[in-house]
Amino acid sequence: MTAYEVEDVLTHEAPMILINRLHSYTEESAQCEVSISETSPFFDPTLNGVPSHIGIEYMAQTIAAFAGANDLDAGREKKVGFLLGSRKYNSTIPVYKNGCSLQVTVQRLFQEESGLGVFDCHITLSENRVSSAKVNVFQPV
Image (cartoon, rainbow, N blue to C red; front, side, top):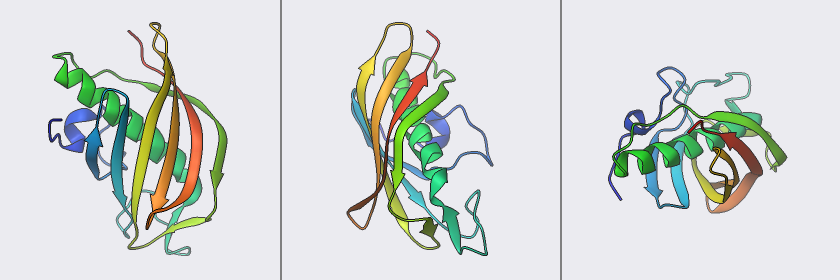
């Protein structure tokens, strides 16, 4: 595993890079970290945090980091991917609070040669799973 910076593996540009660090990845999975602060995109001062529905984008960007890191490892250029939708997004908390550190984990369940893929995703906070979804993506070949 190469220690890539998030900016190296994502096709996103600031201020739309929502994840802070690519912690680890394999050919089938990845884990990223998101640190919630007042400077986080989508931070809501009235909630003192980020609404948990933004978790779906944390998951999608972790999938993008997974794909980008694996592309770079294989000597390919990173490619733009698309979030097609999710199934069964669930969050047990309404807000990711200021000061918390989230671990976002994605596991590839299925990938077609056409570029369609499905990932099992979850977000943990202090080792407790707080959000989960199956995420459908497309990355043109």
